[in-house]
Image 1: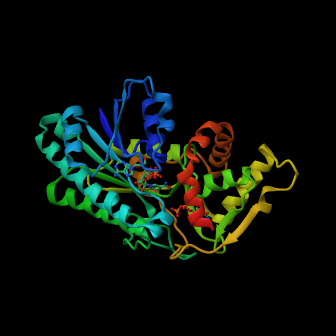
Image 2: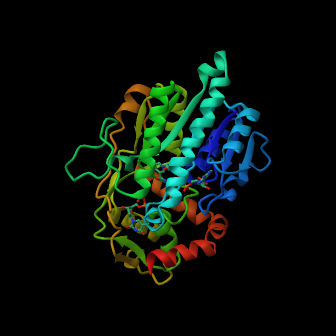
Image 3: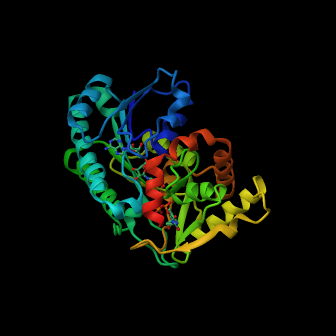
Length: 352
Ligand code: NAD
Ligand code: TYD
């Protein structure tokens, strides 16, 4: 058994589905608080699969986490649970401190106590895999080299600061207590089941709903984009083969300016589902006020994970984005389920 936290969210949900696609895979206990970002519809394909046990709860709930560890005796914990949206962290940072820092601290402490109670092979094999972001490294200029694992942390948003704090805790639990951790710092993910507050799904849905496609500032901010299935395969590889106490950068070797990403999506939609009036979707692009403290560029040097663990992404941006747009066209029921009242309230707050 493995314990996955945040497995009803975007990446955690994809990870659970990918993991259980292998009939010989260990079962999963999935602990998720079901915040606005958690969605049980993502896990619908597993409703008759007894290898998936869903627990509605908080990683900050010490009693619950201890009980789950004692009951299910997992051989690993993969920690996805987090508040993950930079813009929301600007409006309300408190939840980010609570879940990303205090929640991770609680999980580490409960897991350490559990690990101390293990013996022999079970103790030897146990892993705590912390899933983190490239945003902890801060912002690059156009000519800076890409982030390596030794780049100093310089987080600039409440979100990235809270993730950086959690990464530090995980590191310290290894050095101080010998607790068996691995950490991955990944670039921007995209793909199926992505909540439409983030750039790529927001643009796809707004385009189809004849709404403006909001570009913050000049649209020249650069992100490295990784297809979510590739992130899942990287986590599986690091969990299986990663060296204890190490961090691994995970990226897609796909640096793109935001405006380029949005234009690509518009072009694909023009091909797959053109507007009734024949006007290109790019005509809906609207430049809006920039995000405060907006990081200019992220770029990941993912050569360590390739060199040491033999992992490379399978998708290019071109293949991944095509699959992603097609997935949103093919899954209107999932989309209807997430664009609830609270989602509309968020759009109102952020974009008007
Ligand atoms: P998400 O916001 O889509 O999902 C987060 C999930 O965690 C949700 O299901 C939510 O209900 C759950 N959750 C939140 N607080 C919780 C709590 N206190 N206890 C239990 N569950 C809780 O996020 P995501 O995009 O899937 O990101 C997953 C992880 O990957 C995060 O740690 C994030 O920092 C990291 N990450 C994300 C990206 C990206 O591009 N999305 C890139 C690199 C790293
Ligand atoms: P986002 O998907 O929020 O991810 P992150 O902030 O974690 O990188 O944003 C990706 C990029 O797109 C980022 O530079 C902000 C920009 N962006 C827009 O230009 N417009 C939008 O409406 C959103 C949500 C993001």
